Length: 265
Ligand SMILES: C[S@@+](CC[C@H](N)C(=O)[O-])C[C@H]1O[C@@H](n2cnc3c(N)ncnc32)[C@H](O)[C@@H]1O
Image (tube, rainbow, N blue to C red; front, side):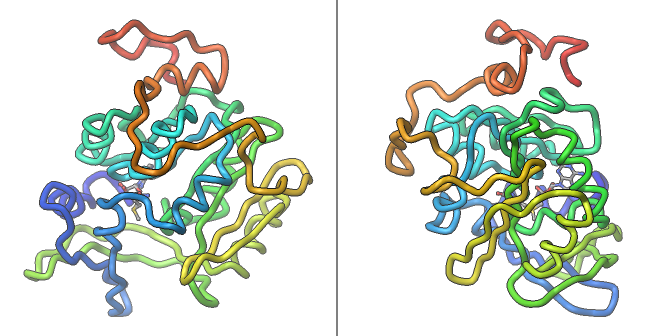
């Protein structure tokens, strides 16, 4: 998705979930799960969150239900999204996020323990191989990428646009969709090792790492980690700089200060 393509998406975020579709050039209408993006984490999300080790980079975080939930669990996390509205909503919810593309310079390069590609975000940019390569660069040597797959046997790169029920449509942008089988192939092609995969009702997930090491029992949380129940507000959600500090030696910024120049990458 490119910046100019998201005006309808941003409108939908502000209005909390009208039924936008992703219209493909060959005429299919793929529903965008706006109510899921704008709602609290569901049980599949909760299982995904249990596989996250901090610090977590939530790529294409949208309004941030996963970034916010991680912050509430006390796991350092940073959202990144090209939508200004989405990033503002993450901030309003008390979690850190950057208004930037995953392909731009990002903090904590090579130090993130988990990179999240949830909700079909493997489609970002339309070239999954390039996106996986980019995410692998962002990871710490023992990090992992958690990727949500499309249900079914899907493997396509497409041109598409967003369409509102009233007929308005946004500009065309490249996107991709991958089911689990295609994702496993793409991960292998990118030199990643699949260390876990699971399904939750109609959603499927793959965990891929730079190093070959199986997922520990119970996902990725350290044995000492006792998550609060989902929806319980964390007393002090981590600041943007805290998430980055956990991803490297980036110093915490003072409250209210601008993002320090030179630390944005
Ligand atoms: C399918 S939605 C996923 C929403 C999100 N995971 C959530 O929980 O609400 C795709 C998201 O990716 C973002 N996006 C698209 N291209 C991007 C890019 N190059 N870098 C970062 N985010 C991007 C969009 O703005 C949108 O929020």
